[in-house]
Image (spheres, rainbow, N blue to C red):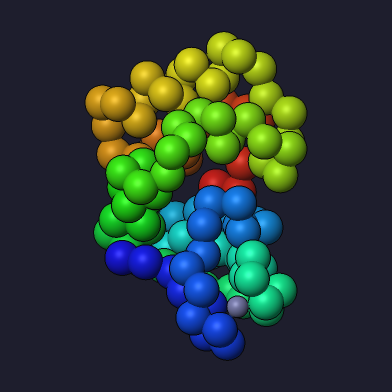
Length: 115
Ligand SMILES: [Zn+2]
């Protein structure tokens, strides 16, 4: 699973995400809404990903990004969070489903997009 810009075909990186929202569904067909802006050409796009596609995407970033995910989460685009929260996310990422970890993290922050 990789995201690419539909205009110039550049790969979308973690830094290109503008918005991420988790949409729970009663029948289990959970979706993750992502908005991103191509780092090369500036083209903006939105995608609705299945839970499995999102998990694959995050795993590909974990494997290929030289930074760790907690460093990325600490960036301002997701708002200021504490060192404790970063540690909690890192712990969860190591042991559990990536999406479930992010969902729980959003819930504990009290400002998540969980429905
Ligand atoms: Zn582009």
